[in-house]
Image 1 (cartoon, rainbow, N blue to C red):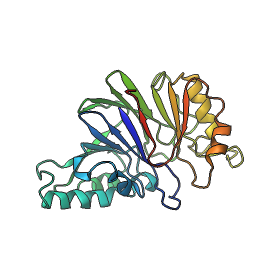
Image 2: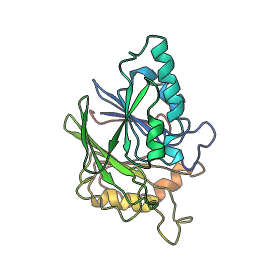
Image 3: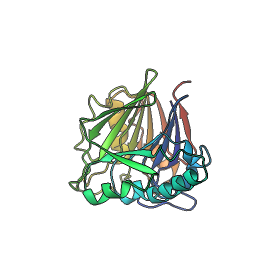
Amino acid sequence: MLLTVLGFQSPYPGPAGATPGYLIQTAYTNLLLDCGSGVLAQLTRHLPVYDLDALILSHYHHDHVADVGVLQYGLMVHQLFGQRDQESPLPIYAPGKPAEKTAELVYRDATRFYPVDETTTLTIGDIRVSFLRTDHGDGEPCHAIRLESSGKTIVYGADSGPGTDWTPFASQADLFICEGTYLERNKPARPNGHLSVGQAAEWAERLRCGSLLITHLFHEYTEEEVRQEAKAYRSGTCYVAKIGLQIDLSL
């Protein structure tokens, strides 16, 4: 599996930036995880929109879904241009509530919605997908996503507070994509459904993950300060998210 970071910032994109979105590719499958603000423009650097096989949304917060509407418009146009079959709407897999959000995921012949929860397992092309509900705080479901293909495993942690139990869901994942929303200097006194960089590193080390990608970062953070607070992770390579970063698990 090849991972490309299309966006990683939160709560909004910085200059020339984008909020969360990750392209997962195998020889047979093109899968998009989340579709935040600016993600679609980055996607087209790597893949035509009409070649996507599926979109999975972890949850419905704006920084993770802001570009879904323009993706739907784009797919509609590619169908009109004959570049995508009108009988092949893009499947969007996402939490089954709230209903007002799920209703927006069906658009003409461009997209179809399929609900998921923590009991769901999917096969998309040659990728097996499963889900874990995270501690994201506001009552609406948010799911981490586990992807398995050709003996490799990627776990995308989505948004998560310290109440999420990652074992065994993310244990020994080849790549753990974990949010580091806060640094020690701005971490709130009470947990609010997000992790700090230090907490992300501690979890990845405890889980013995082969590599760690720290993401969901405020755009003013520097790579140096993120790495400084991720020192608890020693089991493998630690990546700090940036747009265009690629991690090839087949190497």
